[in-house]
Amino acid sequence: MEIRYHIGLCVAAVTLLLGSCGSGKRENQAEEKATVVKAPDFNADSAYLYVKRQVDFGPRLLDTKAHKECGDFLSAKLASFGAKVYQQEFDATVYDGTTYKARNIIGAFNLEARKRVMLCSHWDSRPWADNDPDEKNHHVPVLGANDGASGVGVLLEIARQIRMKAPEIGIDLMFFDAEDYGTPQFHEGAHDEDSWCLGSQYWSRRPHVARYNARFAILLDMVGGKDAVFLQEGYSRDYASSVVRKIWNKAHDIGWGRYFPKRAGGYVTDDHVPVNRIAKIPCVDIIPCDEGCELSSFGPFWHTVGDNMEVIDKNTLQAVGQTVMEVIYNEK
Image (cartoon, helix red, strand yellow):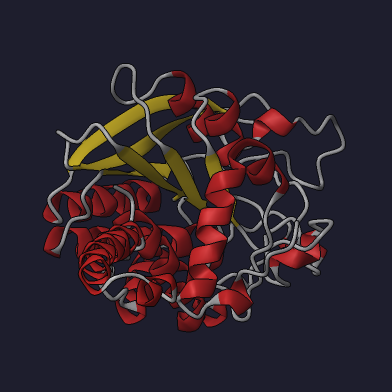
């Protein structure tokens, strides 16, 4: 601007005019580039009730009445929110060779959209409280309020919001089954990593639609505990580092950064591993873990009879749910 005042008046005026137009254009372009979509408000009270509704069925163990009734409930809810529901039934052979009937439940929104994002959780619960401090409880089933039901509760609330105001992209909700049937701690034989995450392994090899693909996936596991801390899990960083940055930056942008410290966490065997390795879809696991991912970082109630509604905190549900919604509603 200083140069313009040292040249002729007419030239200065023309230059000023052109400069102003160019400046305005650049500002508009920058503004368009930086446009942030405000996602709908996540309702933690609603998510909490969806968690409770699952827990009220009892432990969601394969081949039980509670499992069937809860699965039917989840399918009906997704359908009521406008999703196309896929039932993916399969045989799950667990660590000791026993085979059970299992099913993955998928709810797809905006089927015509080629740009898609997956949101995942597991809906079964642990058959054994093998981490309980009381050895007498080691063969008692776990209610799984946090470990399983919390992630599904958050996703059901997101589905409810999508029904009212959909994002621009397609969203697929994956409720994986038989995640928590991994070898129990009391087993004296081999402990195979592949004994976990049976539903996501099955889906990753046989997706619900042919040639399915998504930009990325977000897995929610144990996302309801009070004062949970979600470090950046190891496999998530290895396979989906840009998505990790996207999620954690968004959490800080909207005021939930204390739940999402920008620090590296340890490695967790979870449903995102087969999604990353087999389905080749970059998948991030939002899960409470410390630097070494010691079992204690999952909470003192993890795989114990204490994993009930008393451990569920609405603030944690809000932090995770709103963060995920802000991410998906800002995908173009």
